Length: 188
Image 1 (cartoon, rainbow, N blue to C red):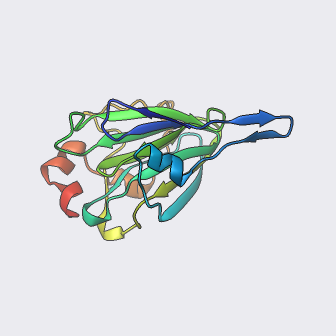
Image 2 (tube, helix red, strand yellow):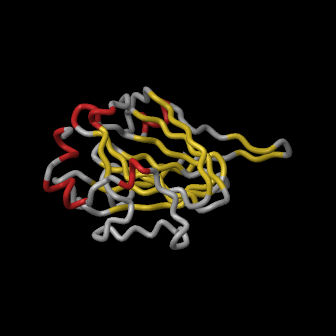
């Protein structure tokens, strides 16, 4: 398993060691000892899984305060653009985003530490993802940034007019609003 540190402190791309033979393939998606040896000591307490069709954009979501979550994201079927926005004021990448294509073929994973907003778009006919969280979901600490925030200008790789966004996510605020009101810090 290869742990690749991005320019975003703590945000890591993981490339698993994949073993192919005539039966198919095998790889470890998570191994506590391997993660610990790479200084990634998380206590994963919840797994979430979703299936979405082309054009779906989920996010950008975060949990605030004591309910903040780190996530380990991978794509089981299809192709997604996975996005993490740094909400940590002390970080050199504060208010910037990182994106990567996660696919069922490349089997890469993204490890997102606490202090980030997370979202993804589906760029294949459909995609199924699974992600681990190191903290439980708490609806009162749930927050979001609007997917089409102009200051971020994220390329979701969805043809214009084909975006499918939930009513809840359409109510998300701008990144500047979230930061100015410190929503991600105090759970407002």
